[in-house]
Length: 126
Image (cartoon, rainbow, N blue to C red; front, side, top):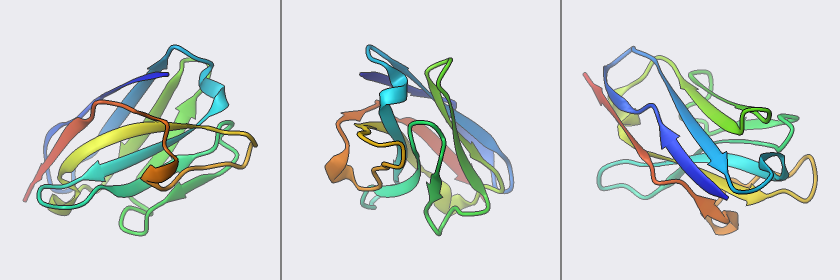
């Protein structure tokens, strides 16, 4: 499956952004979807994940209550709504896919990811 992330940009602290990731090349609903990010000088980290039918969603503690992952299987899209952005949210954001054998499967570690998007840059100024 091919993944194309978009929606990044330069915003001020407290602003909101919505990232999108468009999937193509395979049946989107077969995949659990995940967002990761990598800030400057930092290791890549898990942000949020969603099961193939949106049955469950998981968010990292650092973004819980501010970010929300969602998906639209009819449109082959996964989203990351980011509210109350902070300078520490500055990072390249990557969408990623892992084939899901069950409706409850999610992948929150890069080791189980099968496909990566190219990343979209989010910069939050103070």
